[in-house]
Length: 336
Image (spheres, rainbow, N blue to C red):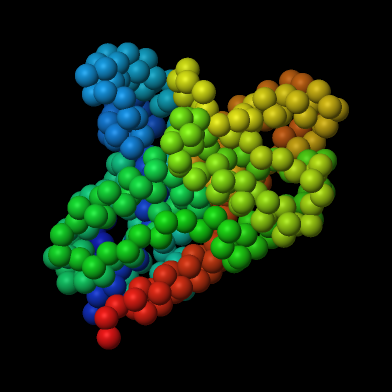
């Protein structure tokens, strides 16, 4: 079955479990073709949490300019990283949910996508029909943002007939930080250490941060915690933001500009991690490991991308700890 197809969620859980844990990721097209990408981008870019422009202005621009122009280009990018089982994000998210289920056999562990399939919106009423009473949503965004985490929360808030809880973030969770740091150590043990470690996070329009979104502070805290776990001096690492879209100002410094500056300083080997992504996807595999690596090579350097935690045992164990802590706090807050 394709990793991002709909699935029988009743078969994925232990009998009698009335508490469900759902890993929610952003989403992905169902195929690496123009039609599938257009459907996915349309759903994604219609979310007011993602694009908060007036609908009178945005919808015509989206449907008559952006989708016709970008869908085929984005489909080509997806095709360059597509796996035999489907989209990397879908494949790794499903496998991560399976790994977490093994860590938490007493619970129902499932995965869903905020946009696309398996649908987060459609999953919640199905769980209620199957006898689930409590849902703990764990968005696979370590750092909170109104454009991502809050959108998952919007869907959860609208669900009826369920006790609900949202994990807002885990950007400095000790086990998660340790897992990321250990992935860097393993890579460097096997391949030698690069001259610099760059931590590249997904970008965000600057006006979101100006309005109070804590995302940049969370990214900075994550990066510093990882650097401390690796015992890196200040000059041995840096933070940047990738995946800019549109003409407005986004968080800085950009990953592309940072790599250009490192090359100008004479740095020839850079290790890059993406701690804002739970699993590998288009933005890590095509944008960083391919496109930015080619750009850096043209400047005489070598970029070595260190994969996301994906479905690694350390990742599943870290998320299991987060889930157990959240459930304990939830139960403690209930009236006796």
